[in-house]
Image 1: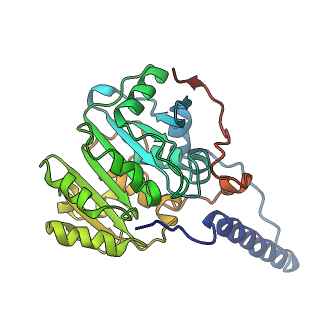
Image 2: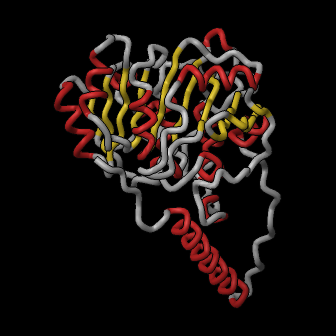
Amino acid sequence: MQCYDRAVHPGRIAVIASLAAASIAGLVWIGAALAGDPAPTPVDAQPSAADIALQAGRHLRIDGPHGPVHVWIPASYHADTGATILYLHGYYDNVDTAWTGHQIPQQFALSALNAMFIAPEAPVSNRAPVNYPDLGELLRVVEDATGVPRGAALTVAIGHSGAFRTLESWMDEPLLDELVLVDSMYGDEDMIVNWYKASPRRRILMVGDDTILGTESIITKLGDAVTIDRVPPSYDLFPKEAKSARLVYMRAQFTHMELVMAGIVLPSLLRLLPVEHLADAPWQLPLTPLAPVPDAAMLSDDAGSGSALSPVVAPAE
């Protein structure tokens, strides 16, 4: 089954929406001026707890052997009880445009997890090859370039949309403990089912929108899922059983791209992982939509060009 993202790029929709919002704000200001009310005085924005956590962490962009790899490490990360969390973007973005345009590091910071977060390059289309089919090699590249040991307590792979192809190449990797499938069930259902059944330690979290048929087909085959009709906006609102269940399925109230861009679904899913929350991270911060930013894919006509939106700081051997 092939994977198709939205025909109209959501980043362009976000830009149009932000321009419309600015126009409305301007009309409100003009109306207030005509009524004789003073215009509001701009106030210097104070950094949020999430911004502070993001800036305190360490970000590296590695010039890997098969494409760029972004790594973000929280300030108080410690590997002894930490996790390794890998995020794979979908089609029509490369890892640089997804990292910036989808505000991926901000969403990592909002999760407040004690984890090393890794976002490698992944295919930008059906015709592109899988960049990192060997998970072990990827983790060695990251550890060598950062000089930081990965979190060995738990290894989780999160994939959105076309990321299913990379995930399938990791199915025989014994290091992988959990899968988070974010509207990415376009691939081989039986491969996912067999991976889950092969060990009682394995766990899957699934969110379905465009892939609702494939996702619910897997749920039918496995038969022991905790099903939630909406993605809860906070950890406290998740059903108790969802926090420990091996198989959790959420029917999304968000569109295909909002799932990874809005700033609610991805941090919510991360918080559902059995990973330590860092005391100095914004783990109690309520999740609200992130302010839209211009989609980084608009900076280039070729989403697969690997444009460097942050400096190459650590070449891989």
